[in-house]
Length: 182
Image 1 (cartoon, helix red, strand yellow):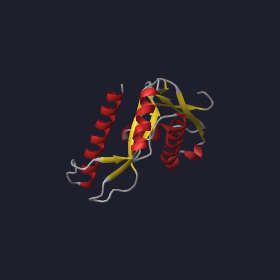
Image 2 (image 1 turned 180 degrees about the horizontal axis):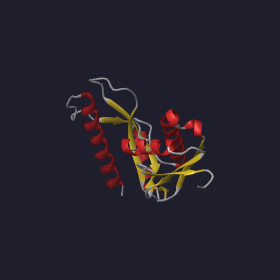
Image 3 (image 1 turned 90 degrees about the vertical axis):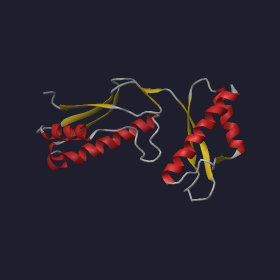
């Protein structure tokens, strides 16, 4: 109902106000986020008329200056499953010269490719970092070590670890195998 949608948007706006206060290091809970009226009304109508759940992002329209009102825009995205668990996201062949000292850079480049592929398919990047998922340091370096252990061309593949919707985050499962199949 309209009332539920408006309560939901109000809750998101309050959360945004708290986040802005935290970032500025001051208590601004008396300062509301301002959204242009027709844009707000359009968002309410879109959400009400949508046959699927919607992801709502309230984004600052510009840099925040202490004391100024918080002007924001509303971004809406349909929420659906983007990747099923076990679904291939990206695969790349790496030659031996891409290993050794360059293995770390090869993994970083591959993760960038995975990020681009997932974003293009519909996973919403984190608005601050621009990434769609998180990889633990131990997993990253384990992947680098695994690449360095091979002497011939290898195929590096990334799969969705579980069903992942548009909001993410995308959790990955990696596979490194010799291109020759051994």
